[in-house]
Length: 167
Image (cartoon, rainbow, N blue to C red; front, side, top):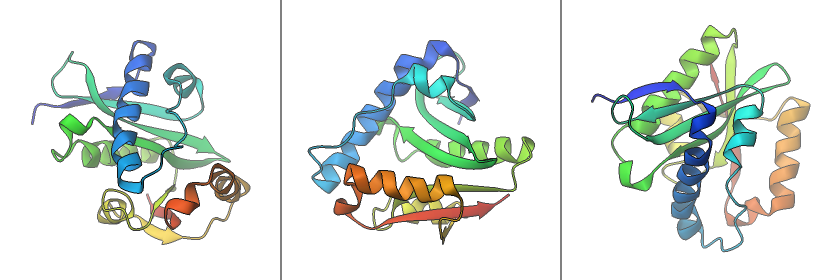
């Protein structure tokens, strides 16, 4: 596979939003979630803390996926992983997670967390295959995510879990 992973730039902002919107459509259909929150603004995502990596099928092509890792209370938190449905099932998501773990490790983080749906195959079971285990929210940021998800009604579509991996 000649795919390349690189840091996202401001030129990728529109693509990030488009990729997330298209990837979310699969989840929305699976959950029957007609009132799903819209994708994040790519420019705002890039301006936040942490880092965003994109994957291209070939050098210089348009991104087909991205991973966004936040610096949250001094901890790495995988906030979003999205791959275009047309590019799905080709290992791009797994490569992005691996690259995010490597980057977080290089930045001095000792663990990475995320929140996801427990029973959706491309959610918790996928992350489990990448080395993440269910865990309990420990930091104020992590507990705040539980409250935010509840206020958005995300928990009405299935059990939400936190997962953690040691770096």
